Image 1 (tube, one colour):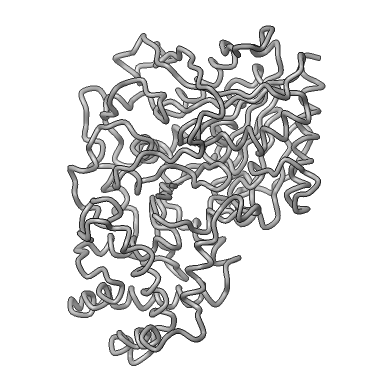
Image 2: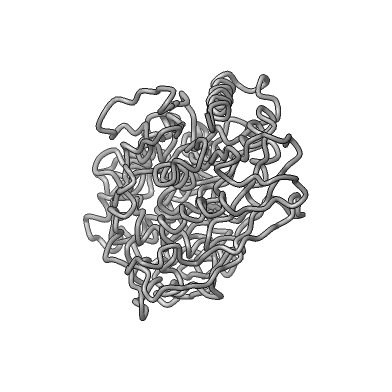
Length: 530
C-alpha cells in the first residue's frame, strides 16, 4: 500500500513497502512497484492446480487445469541437510520481496542454519494469474483456503534447479514465514497442514477478520507526536461539526481551504484529507505504517513531515491566517493547525493529480464515484486485494466515534460501495453483501494456534488489533516452546522482516527479536523427524 495504498489489512509488506498494492494503484491504473529493476533472482514456475478442492461445491464449475505460479530462490547459504525457508509472497509481486532474501529475515535465517530461501508469488499477483482477466467469475479461486493449499502443494512438488537432492517436504524441514496478510496465511497453513512443515513464523499476522476496523488509528493516537495528534483530532471534530450543519456554503468553503472544492462526494473529500494519516483502503503518501527501524534504508518518514506542517510554531502569515478562515462556523474558535494541514495537502497531494481533474479517477486524482471504472477486469494486484477484502477479510478502516483522526463521514458504506461496483455478479460467482468473515475466522482468529507456529507482532503496528497480541484478544498472551510468541516493544508492521546483514549491529529491540527467531528455528530444525 502501496503510489502507496492500503486496503484493509494488511496489511503485508516487505521492509518499507505497504501491505498491498492498494486501491490507489487500482484507481490510478499503476503497475505494481517492483524493488528490483533487474532480475536478482531468476523466475521459476510450478504448474499449480487452479482448484485444489474439486469436491467442494463452493467452486463449481470446477477448473481441472493448472496455472504457472512463479517462485524465486536463493541457495547461496545452502548446505546439504539444511532447511528450506518458504517466504509467503502475499499481496504483491515476487520481485518486491527480494530484500527478504538479500538482507531481511530469510537471509538471517538462511545464514544461521545453512538453509535455502524461496519466495512463492501469491496466486492472482505479479505474473501468477490463472486467467487472462480478473472478472468476478475468474476470481472465484482467490480464497484463503485455495491460497494456503498452494503452500502445501508447493512444499511437496517444488524443484530447485542446480541444487542436488530432493528437498521436498516433509523429507526436508520446511519453515514458513510471512508478514501481515501473508503472516496470517502462514498461520493458517500451519493450522491446516501442520504435519508437513517443521515450523512457521507469522509476523504481524492479521489472523482476525472484522468488518469495521477503527482501531487502525489507535497506535498513532497513542504513540504519535501528541501535539500533532491533538490538533488533528480537534480539526476533525470541527470538520464534522461543519458537515453535520448541512450548511452547503460552509462545506464548500471547507473543501476549498484544502484546494478540493471540485470534489462532489463528502466521502472523497474526507478520504483525501486523511491520506497523510492513512485513508480507508489507500493513500498516495507514506503513513505511520511505513515507518521503519532501519530508516533511511527502509521505510519513510512522510508522516513526521506531515505532522511538522501541522505543528509548525512559526508558519508564514498566509498559512497562519487559514486557521481563522472557518472560525465563524465554530463560534469564533480558531482551527489551530488547519493552515499547515491544508498547505501540506495542496503542496504534496494535489500535484499528484496530473490531469488537474480533481474529481476524477485519473492518475493521482481524488474522485471515486465513477462506478464503471472499478469493474475493469484487467489483472492487477490492487483488484485482487480488493476482491479478498470484499469477500473474506473486511477490516474496513472507519472513523472512531470519539477522538478520531479521520472524518466520521468515513464509515462502512463508503468502502462497501467499491466492492459493489468492482465485482458485479457473474455467471458462477458473486460477492456477499459484506465480507464473509467466518470463512477467514474459522482458522482461529485471535486464538490461532498450532504446534511450531511462532507469532511475532509490533506493539505500535496499526494492524496489531487484528493480530495475536491484539488489545482486543480474549485472554492474556503467553509464550511457550510449543506455541512461541513475541511482542516487539514499540515495533511497527512486521519490522522483524527487515535486516542489515549483521544482527549484532541492529538496535537492541530488533536484535533480540531476530535472535529469538534464530533460536526458535534452530530448535525446530533440530527436532524435525525425530
